[in-house]
Image (cartoon, helix red, strand yellow):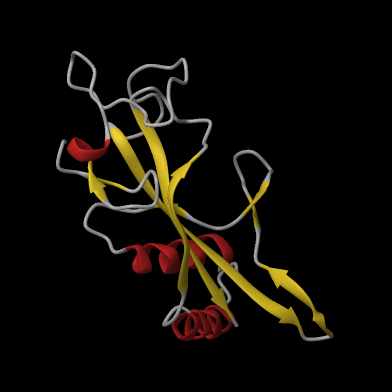
Length: 156
């Protein structure tokens, strides 16, 4: 646990270097108490890693207008950037592509459209720029577990 990485302030460090631990050895949220102890809804003690692709384009009909891809969450109905949790051993670049495809690329079984979308995603996700890496203020954060994300920008 102490050797896991954290980016809570944008700098890669081990939990041992960056955090304090309570009397039971659980890491303490670097942003302070939340009022909820232990892991809560998060899967891991300490940082829980997410990856968020920010996909933009200029509107083909009005090139002065910038557009961004957003999805409507099925669980809450709220609008959000596509993104999700980094699987164990997975690279962030693979996570942003996987999450974007899962959340923004459902064509209801239309195989032709799905193939076309997948080819465009393969090309788009060859690039990308990290625009943020660090702590995320998330309602699931607890005193001992918190969200950290890497946000990457992709422009088509």
